[in-house]
Amino acid sequence: MQKNLTLPLAAFFLIGLFVLSPLKTARAQSSVSPPKQDAPAPTAEEIINAVNDLRIKNGLAALRTNAILTAVAQDQAYALASTEGAVGHERQCGMTLGQDLLSRGYPLLGDLSLDGYRSENWVQADTTEQAISFWLGDDPHTNTMLSPNRNDIGAAVAGTGPYYVVLETAWSTSSGNMQYDAYAILTGMPMTQSACLVEATQYAENSNLPQNSVPVVKSTPLPDGDVIHEVKYGQTLWSIAIQYGTTIAEIRRLNHLTNDVIQPAQKLLVRQNASQLDNLTPTFSVTTTLLPWEIPAASASATPSATATPAPPLSIRREDGIVIVVILVSFASLIASLGFWRKKPC
Image 1 (cartoon, rainbow, N blue to C red):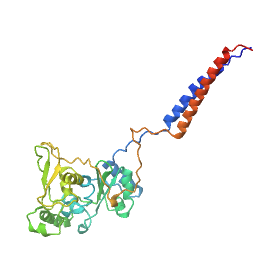
Image 2 (image 1 turned 135 degrees about the vertical axis):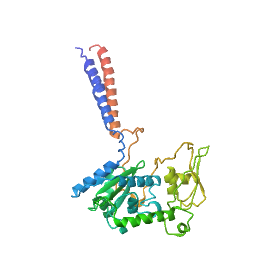
Image 3 (image 1 turned 180 degrees about the vertical axis):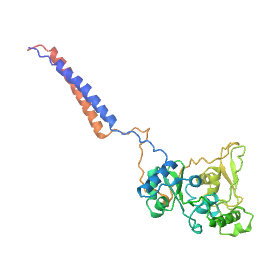
Image 4 (image 1 turned 30 degrees about the vertical axis):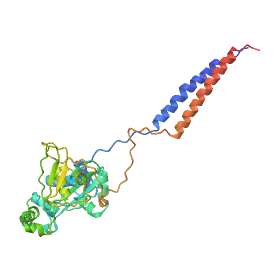
């Protein structure tokens, strides 16, 4: 009696194709994780909210967002981004943070001879959480956020990532008016600034005032797009970089400088391909470098490239090989069954 094995073997062959192959393909696709998306930049509002949340958790009153503190933070964030962090906490003509606040009309409370109740934090960070975590790492930075002698807050973010995040907190008078001691400071500040900024005075040349803040008057782009700046006494690369919206590293590259030392009357190429109508507003699209003492205590993780095709895991390759073997065996069995079917019975 003729036994027909064609249908069972064909069914086995089709099952191997239909069941095994799609299963292995699905596993291969699900084993590779998609590229991670970059986290959005932190915002001033997020920083302020995070600080206030922290204060409330510690039994302290939330701080009021203050326009003057916000402006001070924004100026410092821009300066940090433009100078790749070199400016630190410095201000024009050696001005302190308290003096900066007073000069802008903020009614600072506290002993003004000790610069009043005010403080500033800054750090390079990718997220709000990273910035707050870094500031909680020591008492001075933590005190900026959690001091009971504060009622106002301002924050700002600049740069392209890691971002320069600046936080300002201060305590204003209950009346909203300046303290009596503030007037002596405000009266003396113009003379101090004049000594620092007016290069013609002998006092400015021989005093101990910082010589890193002489105002930079921007040059008009030449017809070929080059912008040439002639260095004035007291100017430095970071103050020039701020005004022209570039970076110290870029100025050094354009002028083949090996360090940051420049001299009065030295002519520097600060921009190329600038339009005659270009107002040279800072863009702060800089590649930033962490300073050793400002590095956030957070580890970075590598992000897989969106264009690279990762090699399949060894287990996936092995399973694909098994599928091929099953298909070949099924096909060979099918051929053999066809030959058996054509044989005549003994």
